[in-house]
Each structure stands twice: as structure tokens, then as C-alpha cells.
Length: 335
Image (cartoon, rainbow, N blue to C red; front, side, top):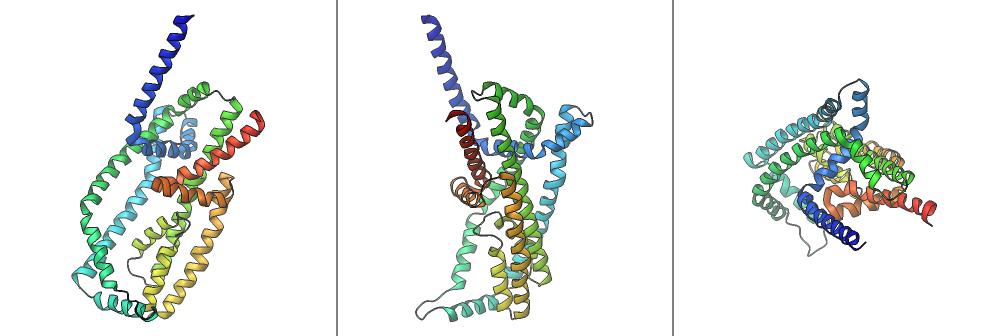
């Protein structure tokens, strides 16, 4: 009996030490792994469709990854190329021609007219500080770009293997889980719905709002609309910011440029078209899939971003959704 107890303690001690080492080994890549697992869940119907066409397991997984690249990655790269070209044009117009100085000074004068006596706003000082920040961090931006490219390659590999071997890994986890089969299935189903809701919902909303903002910027003749449309799409993911990050400065730009009619027209577009689209799509797409009150979704996204950065957009709702599921399981099976 005594040797059996020693064997048990030795095994669990060795298991604990191994798990700790494995945690630190995979720690630099846990964001890539979480995103890979999440995108593989979104792509799972595509993977199953290829399997139904009698493709081998590995080929169905490879074709699903290619589908992911064609549908999502190539359009993003194309948009990035347009944004890069417009950024170069913006840089040359500001730095090369130097014709932006009168406009910047006029904005500073208009702003100071609305400020109380004794309070002044030096717009040139703010712009100089911003340019200094960009130039001081060029090396960091370059290294981040290389790191992002490497992470993207790892992400594609993760999606491939999660699709290819995900079923067997899932069965292993279910066998190891001490919960009942119904509880395990409920947790996995809820997390799957949440991941689909967050990725499909937020990505779709961001794309639609960014597109609508880009159309409005083009119609009302705001320079470099692609740059601001991308910024609006990214800001649409963050509830407190939204597309107002772009629409409000654009309205001021048109107004201070002397295009009052265009400013009013773009303001109406931003409120009625872009803003209404967000109010209609967000609760329906995200809230309906996750089945969690929109109020909690809002705070879970904000808290997730505050704690984990951009990845918190996914982890926040996942955590709240898992908490909801565990509460239901506790009420039915443990209370």
C-alpha cells in the first residue's frame, strides 16, 4: 500500500512540474494559440464541408486555411496597400509641400476663440510632439511589424492543426474532464457560440461601419478616405470610441475648411447611416449569438481590453459567457 501512495505522489508532483514548465514554454505564444483555436472554430463549418466532399483530413484543413487567407487576409492586405499609398501622399502633402501650415494655424485660431480667457491651445506644439513620438518609435514599429509577420505564420499553422486534429484533442479533453458529458458539451457549445458571435459579429460590424464611413468620406470629399475608414473600422470594435473618433474630426475639418454644407451633410451621414448601422447590428449579431445581456458584453469588452489589450475583445466576452454557463451547470447539477 505504501509504495502505491508514493507512486501516486511522485506522479502528480512530476505532472505539476511538467505543466509549469510547459506553461512557461508556451507562454510567448498563448495569444497566437488562442486566436488559432478561435479562428478554427469559425472555420469549422468550412472544414466539414470539404470533408463531406471526401477530401482527406489534412487536405480539408489546408483548403480551409486557404479559404481563410483568400476571404479575410488578402482583402486586408489590399486595404493595407491602399492605406500605405494614401499615407505616403499625406506625408508628402504635409511635409513636402508645406501647404498645411496655414490650415493648421487657422484651426488653432478657431479653437482658441472658443476657449475662456487665459487658456490657450498651441496646436503646433501638439503636432510637433506627435511627430516626435512617431520618429522616436520607428524602430519599435519596424520590429513589431516583423514580429506580427512571424505571428501570422504561426497563426496559420495553428489553424491548420486545430482543424486537422481538433476532434481527437476534444475527445481527449472530454475524457479527462471530471464533469458530466452534458456539462462538458454545454460549456463547449457556449464557448463556440461566443467565439463565433465575437469574431463574426465584431469583424462584420467593423467592416460594415468602416466601409460606410469610407463611402461617406469619399462622397463629402475628405482627403485620404481609406486611412480614416480603416481607423473608423478599428475604433468601431471599441464601444466607447466607435466611429466618432473619425467622424467628429472630419466634420471639424470640413467646417474649418469653409465647406459648411459638406460638414452638415457628412454629420447627417455619420449619425443616420453609420451610427444607426451600429445600433441595429451590434445587439443582434453579437448579443444574439452570445446570449448574454448587451450591458455585460459592453463591460466585458472594456475590461478585457483594459486587462489584455486588443485580445481582450475576445477574452472578455468568453469569460463572461463561461461564467454564465458554469452558473447554469451549478444550479442544475451541484446546488
